[in-house]
Image (cartoon, rainbow, N blue to C red; front, side, top):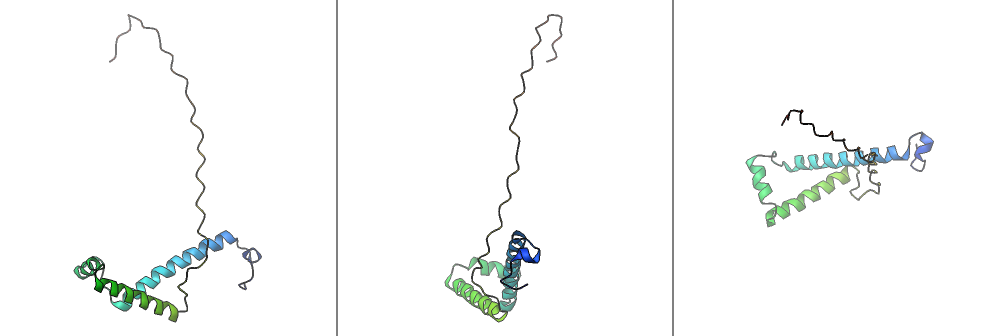
Amino acid sequence: MRESETAEVAGVSERVLDELAQTLAEKLDVLLDRLTDRALTVPDAGTSAWRQQWLGRDSDTGRQHHARRLYIRAVLASRAGIGLQEVSIPPAADPKPAVTPAPRARPARRRVDHNDNQLAMF
């Protein structure tokens, strides 16, 4: 399928392709984060070294580390031929809320006349 060809010609709906493209973009983002962490030899989550790095993220050193991480991520994406600009994929449509029937009022129970021969239960 050529890029200019519409999905309807290929037999796949535009909605399905949009959803799959969104999923692919999300998966690529996660994979790019993991590979960037591997390149920087980031400590495993939950370890004391990781906690130290996490707590220092707002310091000057932490900001420098974050800037370096973003730079390495961009270089890695560029070498893989992936553009980091925001792709104009429309977000998946929110599912329509389920139709709930309007509540129906039940008729009130008719009270039986009080009978002195009736024993009280409560």
